[in-house]
Length: 233
Image 1 (tube, one colour):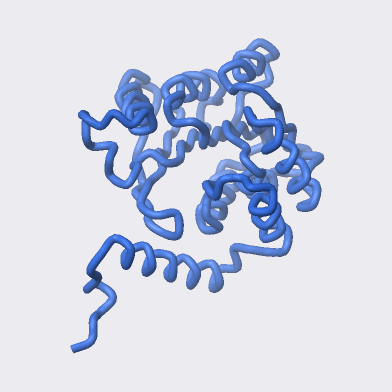
Image 2 (cartoon, helix red, strand yellow):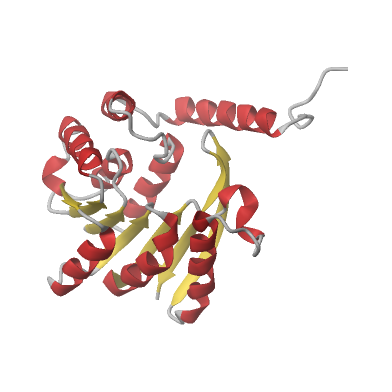
């Protein structure tokens, strides 16, 4: 008897199927183009870690930004600018995306990718630790932002959430990536700093009475993870 798609023997087989489904929908829905592909290639060529959002997740961020009619977006964690391209494309011509990156090399790659995609005039890449640049944004009254996307070092997630809440407008949204950690997030004894950071952010969420949150578990070419989706009321 042949094996059905649900009769898999290992996590590797799961990832193989999830990746195939991603490719099916990416092709069907047209979630890539030369600028996006060039951005990914540039990241590989420069040796950046392959941890950016997937094409389908990029389209998800784009749709959220469009649904919010976002004019001002904040991204914490630029990497090579792949998600920044998606977010910038959702902005009107007079919109603005501020994206924060600690690594100067990553920021340089991102600027190159943003320019190739034709959205560099909509994006400001700020270099430095986000826990230094976020207070600067606050002091300069550069908010409020319609959408904040958090995709940076996980141990700092509780602090990033705190700043995101301060910098968000009422009616805006906050999205935090990589919050499931292959399911490790449910283990209170897990000592991985990434898991502990996500758990600490999760435990902080109920302390904000004007936030309404949910978590979407995700599978695909990026493996098993998830995003926290937060409405600011």
